[in-house]
Length: 95
Length: 492
View 1 (cartoon, rainbow over the protein chains, first blue to last red):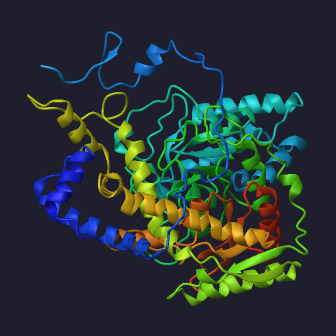
View 2: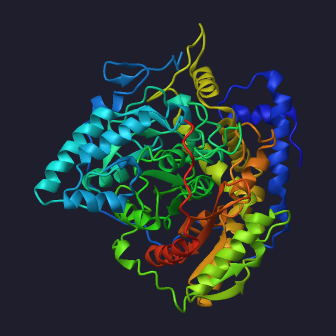
């Protein structure tokens, strides 16, 4: 499996990371090196093996479905790059 | 007492309780040492005001007869831990200016136990790296030096390792996703333990790969590791994977008696091209444990070879998901936008500016292996291989093996800037440690010797899940026989 420049561009788009077009050939080459390393997993016989979901056999805890936290608007917004009138502000999304 | 910063946790604790020294004196000694160690670039955010205030409070507690485990002991905190009101950037530009509104469970536990925070420690960006060269703060430097070159302290907990080895603090927190506590500990001649997955709460620790991340202490001795690990551990309802198990008194389990214990030596860890010195260190460590009365057993962990490639599917996959939160909306950096830029441009520019090259690479690899059409071939296959890796360990523990001895790293510390451009070559640093994260087991690196240049080398012991106490005791027996006391000569 080899990644070409257009695949690299598509992955960058999916990851929401801007990559300038002149960087794409090098990026595709790096991906191919790493994926080449990963390819050896194909040698392993995984027939009938369950994919791991939890490394320690534990049941997730349950608790009563009730509000345990909240009313912290100021703290939540304290680190926002742009907060206005109690909201996060972003560029216009809907025309 | 002179050179108070050179004490370990146990020594300082005992001196504090006897009234031979105060926490304020210990803290001032460390602050002085940090002041003079700018060349190591280990501490990247200094918190002397917090330290002095915590030290004074600790002295009052000791005077009042209330001296919990870490009371008055000055430590450094890896930049990955969120500390309330104190910069917590995970070594990344994207979290520049971020001041957490909350305290991580682990730092809260340490402060409740009386610990004093000296500042935040350098690390690879988002804990992705093995040399501390991906940090936004620049390289942390190893206090060990054999020629004109500057050496890496390892990574990702490179600042923690450098600071402890150079006696800038008594101990430090680290985190370990594929070897990030144990490899830097080995490179700097200190002790570092990654506990069983679930022992330490991950709440408030910036996430890299959530199914692999665990925090642990980096210390000057095995006893210190036992003391600090106990203070860090707790059951935490805020982390759904935190284990609801009692935390034992680890220090009380250090008898040094390992007679009759079965120590496994896995043949698959004898790698092609492994330096003779590593091979010799491993053999001498084996003899030390035999000498202590342990039974040495040859074992096989057949899927070892596939741990690293499986890790480089699973860890980037989880990272791509975890790091999706850095979008320039809620916290951290937001790129300056141009006229007409919409929200997608904001995301793309913010993440391109905020993430360094290695982080971008891993987020994109993770995105690729999770994308439609490749999910089964890469991600699901890697998770199946992970099941097999864990089963390898379960099988040998079922045979009665108590602990497994391996080298900690495939080499001693290398020079900063010496690594090639091939990312996979850097990944190989974790070849002996990554299996332990994949299986969720506890692992400890203990300094055990020096190479011919005089650089420290470490051995790794791997234990049964939830049996850190027994693992620490085996490490204690190894430490006593290895007798590693070398310290780096001060040049900084």
